Amino acid sequence: MEETVMNDRAAAPTGETSPFATPPRRYDRWLNWGIAAAAVAVLGVLLFLGVTYYQDAHRADTESPSARAVSNLRKMVTASPNNAMARVRLAEAMMANGQESEAIEQLGEALKIDKELTPALTDLGLIAMERREWTKAEEYWGTIIGLLKRDSMSGQDQRLSEAYYYLGTTLVELKRNEEAVANLKESVRIKRDSAPVHYMLSVAYQRLGLPEQQKRELDIVVAFDPENAQANYDLGLLLLKAGDKAGAAELFRVAADHAPAGITDPQKQLDALGEAAAHLAEARRYKDSDPKKALAEARIAAALDPANPDSVRLIAQLWEKTGDTKRAQNAWDRLLELVPGDKQATDEIKRLNPDATK
Image 1 (cartoon, helix red, strand yellow):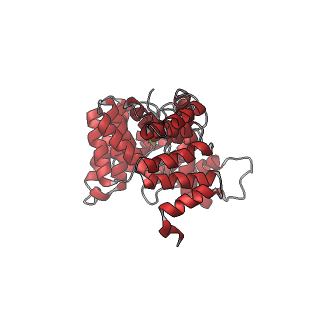
Image 2 (cartoon, helix red, strand yellow; image 1 turned 90 degrees about the vertical axis):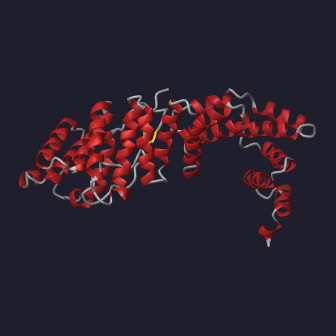
Image 3 (cartoon, one colour; image 1 turned 60 degrees about the vertical axis):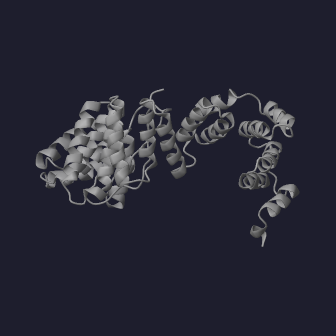
């Protein structure tokens, strides 16, 4: 499947940084490629303009906020035609209003005024990516990186981290994965806790045929974002290929529970593992003779039918039997969530962790 971007929007930055220049987005294999610049710009414009432009009581109620923003900002540009940032803001409002061609024109005019205006270059880079114009996007991100690196504080500049991320993403699309890894590592060097960047690194490593490095990056993503459906799904595929069906099943369950509406890949992987009742029967069968095998079967059963307390109860018993009391306690905790007040679970938790009840 072709990898694509899932938006991961945060509050728009302030000052000279364009609100269109969002934090790195998630690279999601389940969606069709598209940065969706117009949709992103809607939020960016709303956050930047706030009540300043939207509380105009003299505007008709039927006029959309983005249209009113365009009207107000157009007046600002008319009054100050050499204000490059005003043209950038107008372009962003136009993107929010579906006026992409006019927005590109305004960004071009802004660059005529200031050819090194990074917010304008950033917006054009995102538009190029949305249009799948990868070579053009590469040029924009390369220019932005060059401009930002001249700053003595560039090593801590979050905008530079984002530019490296977007360049790395673009290079993945251009199938230049080794270069993509180098640029994504630069992004991580500046901002280590960005789950989207680590996920993109996992994609590049996967394309380079480096499963260990791919897994390492996916583990980081899940550590930062435990409910990340895409990363859990990809990790599940890796574990399944390695023969760890139980671990894969648990990851597919997380992915299925948190996948976007209409995404069925994780559930299909779960369905392919069979019926929960059959796995639970196997777990009971091997409980005494082969606890490790029984535990694997019970974990699969619980992933297939997470609301069944019998599977969870057996998992708790088997984790302790195989020497992992911490996971056993976690399973008993899970059982109490399913069956509040369960006496066995309550007693076992007290036994395993007596200090917690004091």
